[in-house]
Length: 421
Ligand SMILES: *Cc1c(COP(=O)(O)O)cnc(C)c1O
Ligand SMILES: [Zn+2]
Image (cartoon, rainbow, N blue to C red; front, side):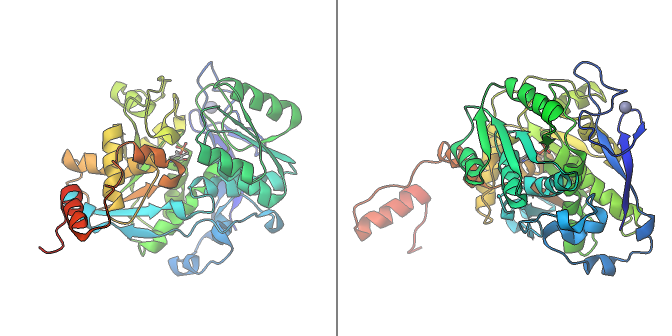
């Protein structure tokens, strides 16, 4: 069992005791600038761990990896059977891209997105700390996952959302018994901040109108994605991992998981972490300017609403730097094309999730994957969360009279398919 020894600022390196510090480093906070605090672990108790021994760890859901997660009390570890999602190669896309292109299909999680890994650990931590209410400002997957794990843990849950939230998302939150209120864009953060500071509600993620600092315990839930990838690839670490990035908690968490494996001597190489975001996003904006601080850039309209925000975190930039990674921006057309191509491999990801593959295909087209043998793209959620996005770019099926001649004509005209040929 490793031990959490403190929180460390990603910008100034200051150390803090583990406590409910969800607003980032107090020393670094200035206006819209806020710097993440990450958990520091003492891995010494795990020295000598072998690959084989780690593979044989057992436990429910991602608690299989409990010795590397920040919840000590076993009776507080909530699970809905998250994690252990398939890692599969896409043969056609691999051929097209000239690299082995693998996808990690996170739509197989309990609420059909990778946010379950975060919500699992953050909710368990809330229980361990004796919180009674969890809360989140979310228009989507984060809210759904928060609500489900609160239900499982027997905690009350309040979600602040927007009137524009997709129906599928709000139905999920309400089904899990969350108390959902729709309010204004900035008002949801102000209300959440008040309830966290005044009533001790436990924040599952960001509530600052500044660079997001999030929940450092939840962030480490994403480490398990890296552990699973190492095991599923029999310790052949991919050259690059493509992640759809908004605040960058998933992106950073996955990277931290690979770092754990490296620090324990289980792998030598680590992957380059590639952040994929909608065109005009804050990461590529900062990279173009050579800036280490990702400033706010007003989000444009994008089909990838789960990753389309004004802000990303300091953690996103630090992860790119530490891993020798990069950022790539993708258009709606590139995202929807990737979703269609993934359909032909048997996957139906949310547009935000298809962005990871759109990013990999884009770099391949630009000749920037020439030295790369294998990439893993994270499919963070399912397309069923937003089927309207697909319907908007795909004509419906042709309606025909039930006659064989009409069938043959329709198959040929609409699909270019000739059964006799
Ligand atoms: C939240 C989310 C992301 C981005 O996660 P961050 O930690 O905010 O970067 C990506 N894809 C989906 C489907 C999401 O819900
Ligand atoms: Zn600091």
